[in-house]
Length: 171
Image (cartoon, rainbow, N blue to C red; front, side, top):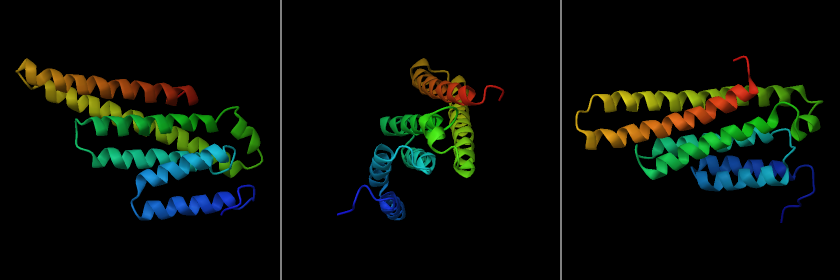
């Protein structure tokens, strides 16, 4: 029903994303956002849409119970989505296509630096909190699963810091 080659077509999809957000239909929002990025990867708002995907996964992570597989999967997807923001800085197809739009370029840089740093810091803090919790437990059987969760958080943090430092080497 929606013409796919019109300049305004992407705006209809973005409006649908907003509608899904207001209805708390997060999985549908992600599906539409990923479709936008697939159909219009060079659109000026692509970094904002990619960041929206990461925000949804952060929300789903916060709604999940600690220590569950669901929480770990959502957390990993949030970090993966934030890491994909790196496509919008440096010398890339997107930056070349939007080189005459300084506002879009600045928005992309801000999202990349802030998003990756935040994700990496959140995982670092979570790993530290879990490590501290585990140190206080004397029973090895109870302590080891907490250390494993801490290790998982630290691995995600390392991935986030690597992505952040890859974009801001002097950070």
